Length: 72
Image 1 (cartoon, one colour):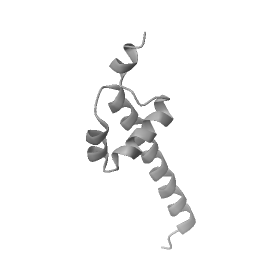
Image 2 (cartoon, rainbow, N blue to C red; image 1 turned 60 degrees about the vertical axis):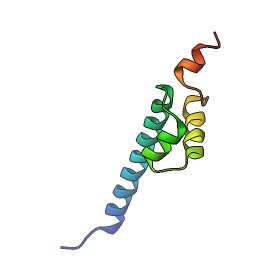
Image 3 (cartoon, rainbow, N blue to C red; image 1 turned 90 degrees about the vertical axis):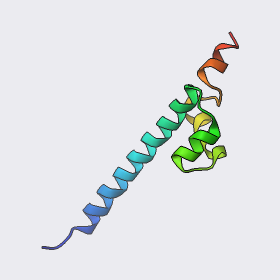
Image 4 (cartoon, rainbow, N blue to C red; image 1 turned 120 degrees about the vertical axis):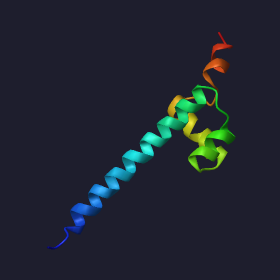
């Protein structure tokens, strides 16, 4: 049996992209729920500044849900 490498690698790359997207969404959700960037970074195994950037990109802001509510 011969492996169809094009198909296998394309499928694997798509799965990695999907997992990265899900991770980023979870990072943004954790921040909204009040978790610190250092906690999030440690848990997601990335730099806390990268976590901050992800939150800004997804949430449009780096503040928690409670911090946002205090602006009203």
